[in-house]
Length: 310
Image 1: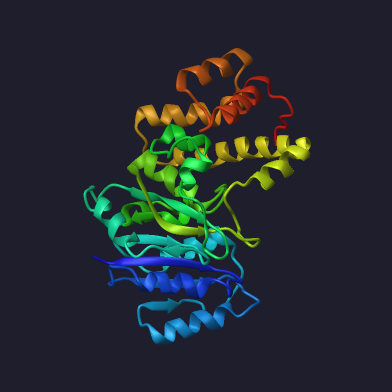
Image 2: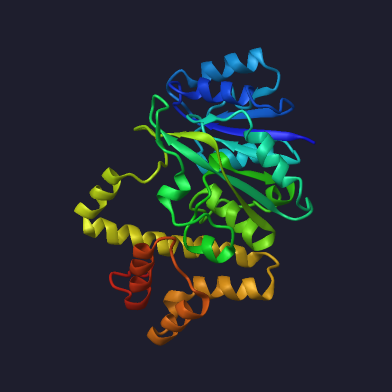
């Protein structure tokens, strides 16, 4: 069994050493860590190089050519760099609990490896000093953890740093356009072509700080949105239309009849008549994971208030 851990790094000098050390402390020791630096301007490359020199399991794949790709292409490059049975994704500023690999693999090995598989877990939200702010990100951020295609079409609950995919799923990722985030797209592929599994246990400490590419929702972030309702409307519409474009990518695959009809219904929602939009919302149950966001989502879909077709 070959395990590859993929770490995307960018200006992470403050925390990346702690993350790599937490990977080294895993109860399972037989793994390879592949790190790609995305054009850091701080000491991150030197820190990575030092770890790679000390531990033969750690590979700095672009030590001499650190072009900036962005997080999605960076992870895609890491995934395609070396073939494995299982791939774990790692952020640069979190802390993995020692049993993370073990717990996830135990679940994964119960499934058929010929079918695409993604396993993800809960996580604890901590501050820069690792003080726990929330015991469960899933419980504080969402009503439930998604495991179905219907749920994932409209909202993602998979945090990339907790997820593992098998090689069957890795092979399905072949494009970069119209992807909102790699974890969301991979979750859609798993839910539509194989299996999406959630483990209700935290396997990492998710560190919140000012430099997070994507962070947990906080009251301060929510307040900033509500103070600018014009931007909030634009954000809602962007998320709806971007998620439709992302979901449309699934139609290139050999989906079951039911799942194809589900995806087609979602990606064409805004093209339908007023009455048809209402009927499709009822028929398929398209919704968000919290009641208020579902209300806003359905209201916008039905009324198309502020919608600008692009």
